[in-house]
Length: 127
Image (cartoon, rainbow, N blue to C red; front, side):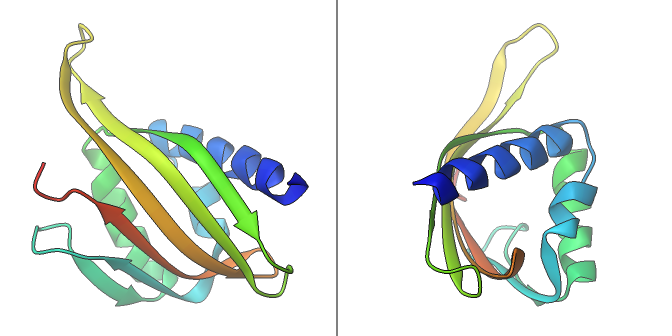
């Protein structure tokens, strides 16, 4: 229970930074050999290994102006092999607040001692 609360606080802080265009807090949580997957056939589809590859993907995503919010975060397991699951929403609005895009996603991540080792993002890529 405490782990999930703490994980949500950290993830929320990182998402706020992403929303401002700062990917550094997210990258600091990732192992140098992190395995990242974003399944599908869209231009966003990715299956890469390495923090530098994830950095490229994150920079592209942040450049779109998408705003992210963590709806719920669950953390389970010992610190040397923890599973984190994030359910969130991303959206894009016109400057006047008119919604252009909104989608929900789930991220399933495996961590070791606070570093994300492996994660996959599930999102409706047809939206």
